Length: 424
Image (tube, one colour):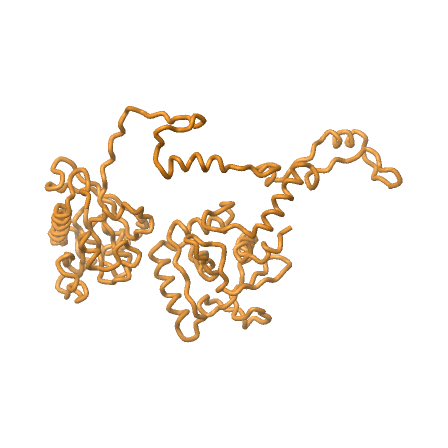
């Protein structure tokens, strides 16, 4: 049976509703009594009403939850919106979050805002909500009283004091009428032992103290490998064979904007084959990858080997050291693209990596891009016509060569060599 703490937890209620295939209802009141109280728009709703079992519970959408990746809890509105948008790719989800925040602050909106979950957090949360994961590193545990009660119950089950499969006596107790049981069946029951539930099997009948492992690990994690390890700690084996160093791959960031002429679907045909095809053209629209590779020979960097470039449209999966590998950033001139970057200001960003703006040939470059100075390379491609063939797009190759020459010159100026970027 669920404890009071579990019944009052919005995350557990949402998980149970998803498991029973009975999604909660968005309402404009804490006590919905009529159909007019239910709404479809999360921007005007103020509460979330659960009806997946015999009881009825309603939570304000502003309720803080136990989902707290950075210590600050996410509210229920952000969690429920992430679940509704679980199938969206990263750029679509970010755009939808921004649009919802505008609706919330507009007249008639419920107020407040939703927080944007990064890709890993969103994946982890949705796996937990669907029941594919029993725990999440971003979700705090319930109150200690509830956890203690659950642990005590599991211990009683494991020890046979409660729960499990009870034995059946072959004879009724004195003074009471017993149920007639087949003698052979009663002997079988008496031979059985009581078993615990899954919690007792996994956790045992008493808590285990692992603090000694933390102390041992801290020696290696905080201070590096000790010069003289305690006698009880086995020394790790060290191989004399050196692993070959992996070559550092430069990174090119694309704009996630829907107005960008070059996106993940058509960037490879442009930079690799020298042919521009619109991103929404049927021949390329099936490409939904969020990471691509292509190779290019840059003679002034390494005349003997082709460099392999990594192309992505979001830095959500970046590790801190990845930013030193970013050599170019494609942009449409929209500064919201840089909000999740290490360098959010264009002047600082384009001092570390080359900016590239691709527009239509013959059209004026946006003033905001011009204001970013020489750190941004501006080029134009001929406008697309479905009647054209590959032989009619010969100017695209010239534009592509301009882009690659600019990238090579920028990498060389910033100290790139055949072994990767120099320490800057």
